[in-house]
Length: 124
View 1 (cartoon, one colour):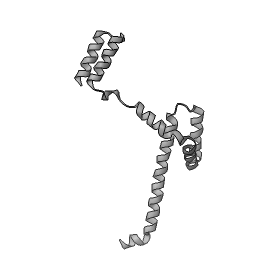
View 2 (view 1 turned 60 degrees about the vertical axis):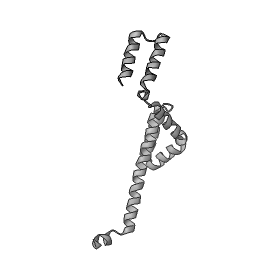
View 3 (view 1 turned 90 degrees about the vertical axis):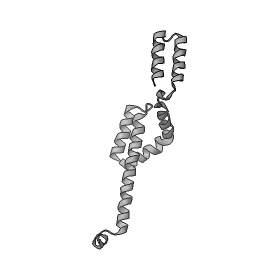
View 4 (view 1 turned 180 degrees about the vertical axis):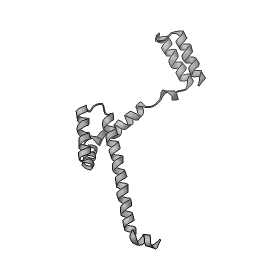
């Protein structure tokens, strides 16, 4: 045990842990940047290709540049994507039946479709 301590001092261990942590944090930033970039509909394919090349050629600079220039609204885009993934299956059966009744009264569905939706909502 003493031999292992002499060959690899505590400060070297701390330095190794810091470098490893920074490496993991950089990969996390890379995934955040690419995830945001490729989900954006307001960015053209050429711009996406340009950012990809920049991040591959100059990795740390490219990711930081993307976050500085494009990250201003990153949180808003993330929240809007999360809001779009909210499932309507969380609504109660009564709310589903009320919606089906409204569709029936508006003439969007007929009585057979209403009864099918009603059975489906009550089966939950």
